[in-house]
Structures are given as C-alpha cells and as structure tokens.
Length: 129
Image (cartoon, rainbow, N blue to C red; front, top):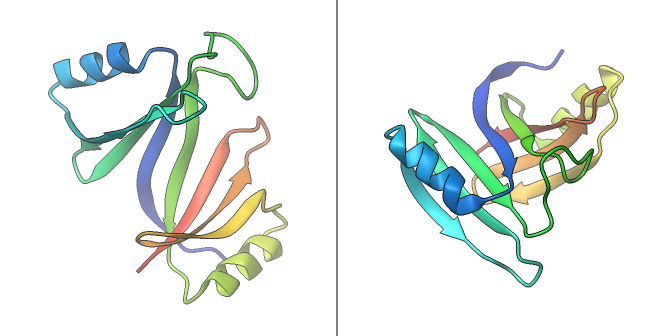
C-alpha cells in the first residue's frame, strides 16, 4: 500500500501570469520565484502558501475553456510519498493497478513520477530527500 504523507503543492495553468500573480499577491501570498518566458513563451512562478506551494504556469496560446492540454485551472498536484526508493514507489503504484504517465524523474529535492486521474488531472507522487 502507498503511504501518502501530505499535499506538497498544487499547480495551476493560467491565461495571464501577471494578472494571476497580482491576484495572489493581493491575497497576501509571497511570490518565491518566477521564470520565463522560455522559447515557447512559457512562464512559471512559485507562490508560498504556508508550508506548501502554488505553482503557476502560463503560455501565450492558452484560452479559458480549452481542453485538455490548454485547460485553465489545475495543472497538477503533488503528494508527498514515503518510500525507500524510486523502485519501491514504482512497485507500489503498479501494485495499486495504476499507470505511470511519466517518470521516475529526478528533482532538485527528490524523485517524482506522474499519474493521471480518470479525468486526466496530473497527479505527481514525490519522494523527498
């Protein structure tokens, strides 16, 4: 059985990064870092929400209401997982009968893999170092 230990962050896809950052700053949240635009026009930001984070993504061709890849709303959410290794995590996911969409992928602070819920929402499972 997987041992989920908490929610790490939520990722949102937005149509207008500046407007979104202004909104969250107005709520009193701190923007920790931003990046982009990259060669595709993609921008991202990390916003501190207590001990968790809100990851925000945008790109020039996003339009509200598009589905599924260009949808505005939840991009993904990440669950912290207690596991001894990436292999143990992969085995646990497979034993649960779930399909891995991407990963395991090394991160700056651990290893993660991605699943998709029945509606296609990306769910990141991450082991932290």
